[in-house]
Amino acid sequence: MDSTATVTVDLDRPGPTISRHVYGHFAEHLGRGIYDGFWVGEDSPVPNVGGIRLDVVEALRELRIPNLRWPGGCFADRYHWTSGIGPREDRPKLINTQWGGTSETNAFGTHEFMELCELLGADAYVSGNLGSGTVQEMADWIEYLTGAGETPMAELRRANGREEPWDVQFWGLGNEPWGCGGNLRAGAYADLARQFGTFCESGGKVPLYRVAAGADGFDVAWTKTLMEVVADVATHPFSATPWEAVSVHYYTIGGSWKAKGSATGFDAAEYWSTIAAAQGVEQLLSSHAAVMDVYDPEERFGMVLDEWGTWWDVEPGTHPGHLFQQNTIRDAMVAAWHFDVFQRFAGRLRMANIAQTVNVLQAMLLTDPDGGEMVRTPTFHVFEMNSPHQDGTSLPTHVVGPVRDADAAHAAGIPTVSASASVKDGVLHCSLTNVDLDAPLVIEVDVRGGSVVEPHGRLLTAARPDAHNRPGETDAVSPRPLTGLDVTPTGLRVTLPPHSFATITAQVV
Ligand code: AHR
Image (cartoon, rainbow, N blue to C red; front, side):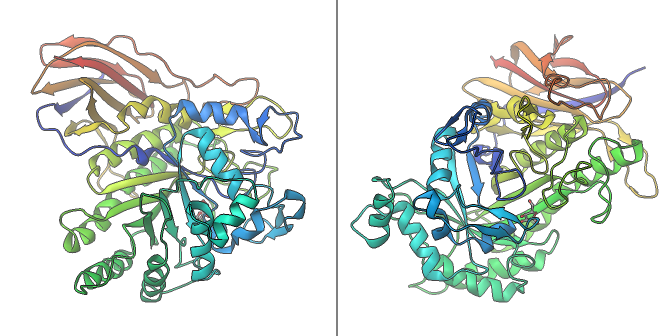
């Protein structure tokens, strides 16, 4: 007999809005993420607009990508923005000391990034250099980007071909300062970020949403130190808060940092340890949220998960510093589980950014250096299928379902079902995931406080959990219509195959 689960969706208890920015992205100067991923240059045979590849832009527009974080990551605290402006032939050629010691031509800089955001229809999230830059350098960059007056930096921007200032919404105060961003202790970083944040003044109408760089994993003491600054500033009548949000990073590592395992060649034990690791994001967010709640019960300050995703050993034959990895149904399960967690934190979590968008870590798109077809990964499809949740009203969703038996590594067992739901413009959107490796699952969706009609859905799965797309086989994993979706007296019933993700849309009556 098939396993069963019940998912209860409370239509009559609407929760907070799900910020579209939790579907955000991240692109670093790392491996083939920027060069070859987004940027091919104007003379490339690859179709491009001003050097930016069109196939990548068109695919990402399908995701309604809300924001893009750039230029790092660890690279951000080594990046001096003036290297990436002006005529390209005059820009300095540098070495990317952080990622593989490869050449950094600076062909892709501030103008190229902002043009990319405009093409994508995405908000810019710029990571400022706090680790090796100065307060003046950061303030100048902001003036260059957003200044409308006749100031030196705004005039320099105009001289470089851009008359109007750009809109920049999000600003990062450094990255991983406890590690690659300066090896700082929490108090030292908090003081620096307080100083830098004070001078991050947008020339535009909307103030910057500044993000203080957060903890290493579960280091809640770091978050506490940052929240103490916020509490301290509140006691000074003439001080303003130096940031609006605190970040944290969480990578899903199926193995260990030294031996992460292959993206495609994995056994059942590695599959399950990956699922368990992905589920850890919930505990991570709740531990940091609990600390923030102490200082900010009204949730005025946001939490930002500005790096998340799977991290495997690089593909054989590729540069170890370039973090290029394949992407399978297992990665799709990880992404789907994360989004359900994000929706449960809709009040506090204002933004999340998958690492990274093209050719690096858990990418949406893989481009072929030999000119073959671009590939949409299974993770791309999860983002696309879930996009109707963007800016929807979250609905409390309660899951009762099977739990994989406990073993030595996972004492509490591993839940195998996840779900989330939202409503927008009278339409219910529901996401369902069955991560079980072998067992199909019958799910009863119990809709309370209303009824739904005309349901239809899509399903993402494959015969094997390591199924993936590649040039020549770009649709091995892609969504198909969800069959066997029935309306019941209490809601909906559907059977999900093993390792599958489904989205359902229905009219609320
Ligand atoms: O995403 C790759 C790297 O992981 C980022 O540069 C860094 O912030 C994190 O450690």
